Image (cartoon, rainbow, N blue to C red):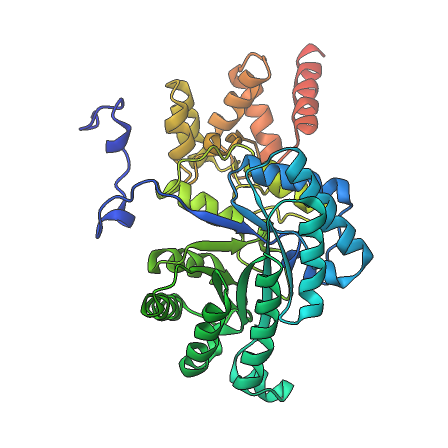
Length: 419
């Protein structure tokens, strides 16, 4: 019985319920902001990369089309100051299309080193000035809203005087009262902030909360008549960081934050790589993301973070299969000479679009099609008896066999046949 559609019409092979309630999205300008070298390094389990490793990461960010990156807290000490300076110099000398940003508290002493680096290197920097705004932070710190407003205004005034572009960051925005945010946001805009960063600092928000907060912030900005952008910064404590970030984009956020693999404090930040995969698959961006895997692996190596074997896209198992039914379908697609089909018949993420490939292996859950395919890939004749022998070895194993073990099985079969 033949299918009712033409195999040449790929669009007919997948029905996308994700788009069933709305029009297909159009490619658009999406501003992504990488925090791997700042907020990502606040994880107590990561290593601070060398400056050479940081420069490689910066180059990959530019290659991937990331608009801006927070590259450190220059107020934290000499090494941090020197690294931010080196990164800004590298961006300048290589004319990278990447905005260099640096973070600090909303105090003049934290803004000063950022202004110094901007003056020294000669390219514009953006300062991300942060202060807690939620009632629980106010109570813990002994702050009032007026104290937060005054402290913030002084820091913003200094930054503006030094010709620094400044983003006002309210930590724990997702647990802050609207009346407090109204006062703080309007004051920041009045004093010259060009961006407001809405933060889910402890990973409290749900998508509904994200939409409500972004819409509140956009309405407030519209009411002021100012040309101010909105950033979204999320954490993953409830496992909602990626979906929250996509909700923020839908609600009108101008810039989305994230880190490679979501590294960061506690359970981490939004995984910017997963956000990029979803934006690409949704048709919102059409960028070349073939270096995305290299970026994540480079950050992982530099920060001494192990990539989970099943981590989306980048993990070793992301496109491996040893299951008979799954492998058989992929092999049938490959035999048609249709890489598009092979990449999608058992995967929602097409490996080829991100610089990876499907891998068929052999283990206790495999079928004869796995064995025949592997033998053919190795240039070996896939005879019936050899196939049965190798499959029997796999069925007797408790795990997927390595190539070395499979070659040993082939050699054992040949030796037995010759003897």
